[in-house]
Image 1 (tube, helix red, strand yellow):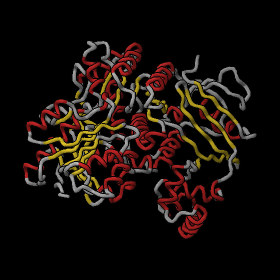
Image 2 (spheres, rainbow, N blue to C red; image 1 turned 90 degrees about the horizontal axis):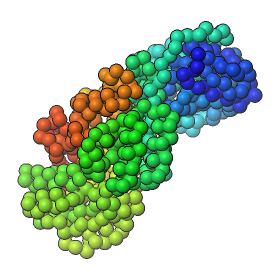
Image 3 (tube, rainbow, N blue to C red; image 1 turned 45 degrees about the vertical axis):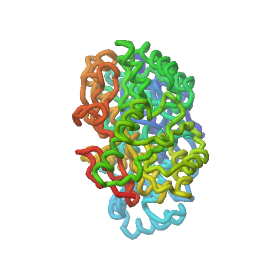
Image 4 (cartoon, rainbow, N blue to C red; image 1 turned 180 degrees about the vertical axis):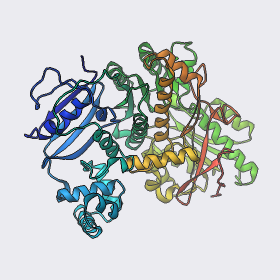
Length: 585
């Protein structure tokens, strides 16, 4: 029997104890085939065990086995998982018992719960916690927990029943592992033939350009995959996440990443956004994916992408844009300022607007349609500047704004956090007392912390954001429990929804490899996700916006408009979603 997946185990610890007594039995007891290799410390092939197949991303932790302590690194690959065993000192000068206590603290357990699991008194655990905080140089349990998770310094086995812990990544993995491992047995009983896992290749921006956004995308996808695998996978198959980071300003780098994922056997691709999206680049990317056949779901707000797919007939039927194009932002801005002025909520002195758009023609939010609508609504565009989307010259823009007669509202099309923060910083050096309206960026979870008072009163919109409803609230709670951090208002939910939509399409198709059937199901279905309604246009494969593209809120994803009030996001438009009141500046 040929193994369905390859597990590469590397022992760099001068001690094969954990490989011998834990990982080899774990994999073999799950129906693996050790192949021709006989030396434990050398690379060997195994069929993926249930615990390893449940991995939705990289995972590292300390592991104790028969008095031996090692550090384990697990890295999913297209054809399996790489297991690396290292010798590493305990962090922060902690003892093993303190590391166990810290791990349980990071799972959200109280001192009483920890005492029950470890067979100690509550006072003893309290003393351990005090010493842990002192050694780590932090002031609270939550801070210590955050460090434990972010630095991956938790330890297994977890004392007590791991199934009683919150569904965090390591706890979920340990729970699955505990059901499939006989740490003392080294006998191999061949199991039934197992189905090949389904691979989702995720393409995310590199850390140097959009670290926070890329992390949000990955974590949203990982949570969805973990939940799907906990439910038993799709048609008896587990789902594996294969993430890569690319330079999203380089079409060549994106195409290279897509090629690598498809060569690795990806059954579907997800892509965030790119800054290499002119018609030639976009069509070349779509052709690459179409020639393979696997579905691609992307969250680029791109009119060019929508037009290319619509004009291709059936060629790009496996390409899906999960949001409306970027030119909806300009139309939404006009709708909001008009509604505020007409309702008396805001009193513009001269109905003068400043438009600051990107210089990249493929990303511009203010087009001829917006300009024509502004004229019909009696708005005067007195400033129309275009700036580099990655490195805008804000000083020149601010000089232009201050040289001309005062404007009532400023529309700033910006999709990266650092450039928007730089604009707000310069603007507030000598504010113009105008209504400032921007796009997307404040959806990032750290924006309010970084912007602080600079963001107060700011209006911002997203055609791909999360609403204030039960589904979004439940997702936020699950995300925080799993990742120990809050999601933002856009990317995490979007990529969570992408994975859930793919899983639904796979489950409804005769075979997950029936790519045409999977794509047909995606295109013909209406999905209600964390970030709203996904109803793909039959020609363009694009999700329309409500109320820009449809007046029916059940057929379009809401174009959400927030105002930052008292350091928090308040959803004000559109009805029936917006319930907060606009606060005049």
